[in-house]
Length: 112
Image (cartoon, rainbow, N blue to C red; front, side, top):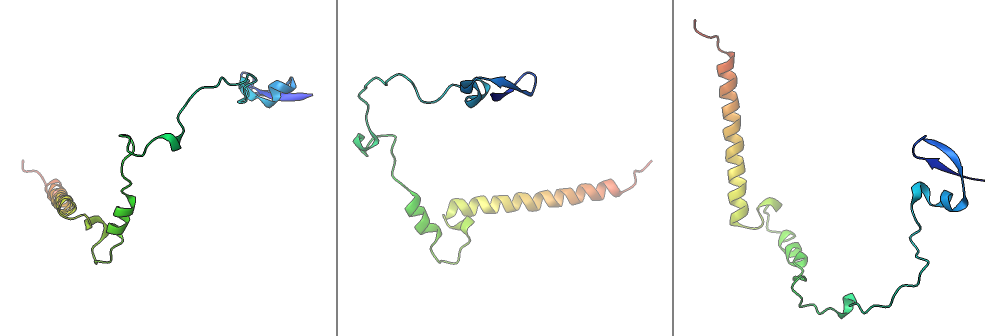
């Protein structure tokens, strides 16, 4: 006898072999019908100049980031990285100063 998990009662119940091997009513992936012959393009048939295929930039970026020039990775791409880094540092320092001032003002007694 075959068993399957019953979703409603949360228990094992007796089942037919086909139901036991396809739990929760899932159907088998393999189709019993023969597939209809269609003409489709294979990946090798598509020319590499199609618009959705772009140039692979990974080797170029690997050369850039693995260059031993002494720069940290977050500054390797030049001016935009430096600008973003300095902006982030300024906001961090400014936020820290603002928090310390707010903490100082909160710690002072109020005048009556």
